[in-house]
Amino acid sequence: MDFDFSDDQKFLKSEARKFLGAHCPVSAVRAVLDRSEKAYDQDLWKKVTEQGWLGAAIAEEHGGLGLGSVELCVIAEELGRSLAPIPFSSTVYFVAEAIKLAGSEQQKAEWLPRIARGETIGCFATVERPGVMNDAGVQARVEGGNLTGVKLPVTDGDIADIAIVLAKSGGQSGLYLVNLSDSTVGRQTLQTLDPTRSSAKLTFSGTPAELLGEIGEGLSLAEAVMNRAAVFLAFEQVGGADRALEMAKDYALNRYAFGRPIGSYQAIKHKLADIYIKNELARSNAYYGAWALDDGAAELPLAAAAARVSACDAFWFAAKENLQTHGGMGFTWDVDCHLFYRRAQQLGLVAGGAKAWKERLVTQLERRNAA
Image: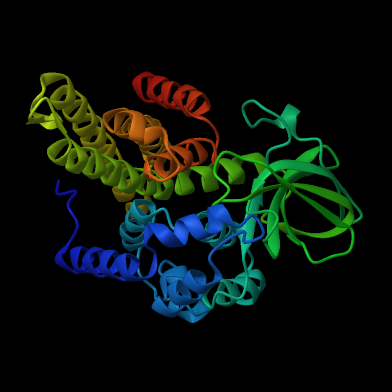
């Protein structure tokens, strides 16, 4: 079985890297980080929209490019490599995928074209407290079509136009589409380690909510969306981890100590080799996840969990060791190491922490072995 990208996908990857190299340098990431009032790079968001990336995996009939999920994975890797400070993952990996998966034809026709045109930013609001997402943890309620409750933290919740919210109605869970411009919605921006990807506390006080899918399917749909998003996020993490490795290698080759490049010392060689091994393991699992997602394979929950766990580990390790390789300079604001460390931590939590995904991975392996 060939898990490599096709020639067309490799061309897309190359062009995406060139585009982001020109329009998303590190200075653009720092501009968002340095200015607290700027939640994301609006200029980059507009340019990405013009490239058609927001609609890459959206059908042509709904205003998208009609490409597959593998092409979106290709784009995701390059976005992760450049640390793009835009709400792409929340809008495309979560909200668009949720609407594609569970939306009615009317909901798809209404919202997918808006997402593809960059007119609508979305967020996925399922979490209310620390821990694994489960039925007991859902306290938000929908009564008479109106939503009441609190969700936090919600990535991009402070800038989103719509939210997909996990809530209960009559004791049964459901996913609900909510317009965040309603006056009954309260937003509070939260302080996080990576301000280039904002987060918020959302409070709903009788907010009109539209059911997505069927009542009683909320948790299963949320988990299905998480599985899909986990694959895309894994590619972002692989992209970031690869770039962190390149930074560490370049510094090790150009930084001299005692008359020799520090890269010639065994301790540094071992660091870089360890990063490379974890990165390659994460990449192989991400490719497996991309295949399972694109093929609609039954292995998707297992492949998504494996991709998520290995990618979280790889990006965190690469970011940490990149910082250590730079030594004292690595801890300073002027060196870019902290940008990758921040993003590694943020991506490691945005769809649930690694611990929860390890439990899911074990559960999936037990089910497969018992079959």
